[in-house]
Image (tube, rainbow, N blue to C red; front, side):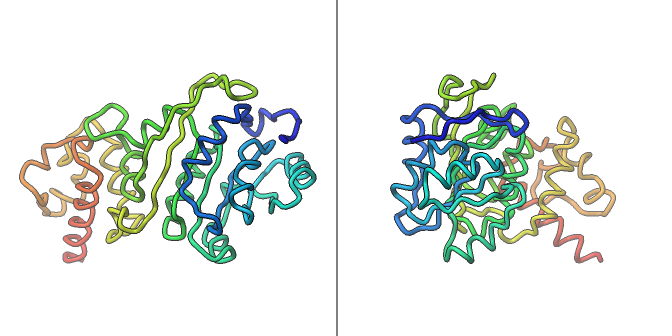
Length: 267
């Protein structure tokens, strides 16, 4: 049974009201019974109720005190914690629960990015994340090179995980109804999916943001500080004349690694 209380606009709450959608999200999660499963923002418990049937050690992180109190009353077996998911220590949770985390949640639109990047930063302690978010954001995360949606979020997400857009979700299954469509994305965090494992995260992020910060410029201009001005050529012919959206995430990681090595040699 779900918990009846009014969503708070200040928390960006849009509660799921369709049990079929909740079951579909739960089926997208690839956790086995006994795996460490963490739900972000259970709200009134529509998805939580389904997850708890399969994962008895489910941990739920909820910022809304009303939801925490209500869930503790209606689902006494649930380990619900009053916590802000944007500040979660995923590594500590992984240690506590004894394994790589399977994270699932209906993310408030206004905190999707900070939660997403906190998960990406902690990817070594995660197995997967199944996240519902604004459809436009989901399409950016999974966009292919050369498309209009391909940019910094696409590159970093695809370098540090294997994202898959699983299905769209209509506004009509929420209360209150959002003004935009949603989608569910699954991120696979297995190490072999990490295309940037050999490059420092901060450096990769800096190179990618610098390249896309001047999106319409060729890489020889946007990355001039680390190439022409430093006396360093590009690793492949023609890359200097390409724009950033022409390179795949793996190629951008290769470029970042190459520049780091050449710059270190000159230090």
